[in-house]
Image (cartoon, rainbow over all chains, first blue to last red; front, side):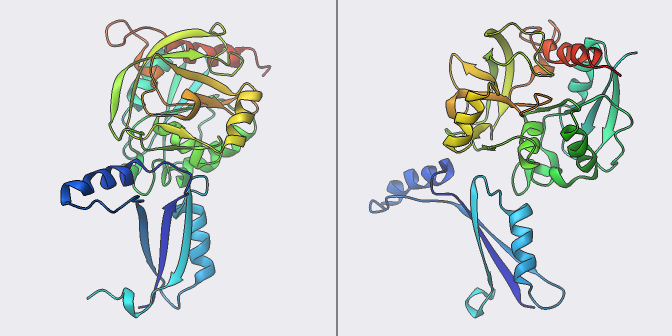
Length: 84
Length: 227
C-alpha cells in the first residue's frame, strides 16, 4: 500500500536540547567532526485508497506538526522507503 | 449562588484531583468534566489540570486538543469564560491556539520538581485579581517540557500588553524565554501557568498557601460579573 511520509523538524531557530545531547555524546564514540545534530520525527500514513497529499498536508498542519515550533515536509514514499 | 468550577479529566491527567480540591477549598462547587463529553454542564469556569494527557504522545497537549470537551471549551473561552491551564493544561491551551507560543523540552533536559518562586506581574486577569502587583509567590513546579517559546514579536507583544502573568524568580527551572512562567490571552480570561498553584493550598501538603489566590481570584471575578 503506498504510504505518505511526513517529516517533522523543529524550526532552525528553536533550541533542540535532545540533538545537543546526542552531539555532545559523539566524542565518546571517537567522532569529532560533527558540528550539529538536530532530531525530528518521521510519520508514515497509509490511506485506504490512493495517497492523498492534500489530505496528508492538512493532517500534518493540524496535528502532526505544531507550526509555532516545527516545519514539516510531505512526499509519497518511494522504493527506497520500503521496509525490508 | 456558589460558582461552579469544572475540572477536566483526560486520559493521563494526574492533578485533576488536586485541582478540584483547591477549587473546593477556595469555596467553589466543583464539577468533574470528562474529556469525551462535550457538555460543560453549566460550569462558570474550567481548569485544565496537569499530567500527561494521552501519554504526551506526538507533543504534549497535541491530542488532548481534539478531545470532544475542548470544542465546547474553546467556544466558551472565546466568549469570555475563565479557563486556567496548569502545566499540561497550559500546553493544551497553546496547542488549541487559545494562547500563543508553545512549551518545549526543558533546556537542560532534566525533569524539574521543586518549590519555585514566581513574581505575579498581571493582576487584572480572571485568575490573578487577588494578588498584589509584583507579589512574589512560592508554588511547586514539576515539568520536563515547560520551556516557553514564542517568536520575538509575540514575546514583545505579550510584554507590551501586560500579558506576562508570572515570571520565574531566583532561577529559571526550564530555560523559558524571558523567564515566562504564565501568560494570558488578550481578554484576560484564559491563563496558562507552568507551575502548580493547586499544590500550594494547604499547609500540610504545600510550601505555601499562595496557590489558593488563583482560585479565589476566579471566584471574585465571577462574583463581579453580572448574571
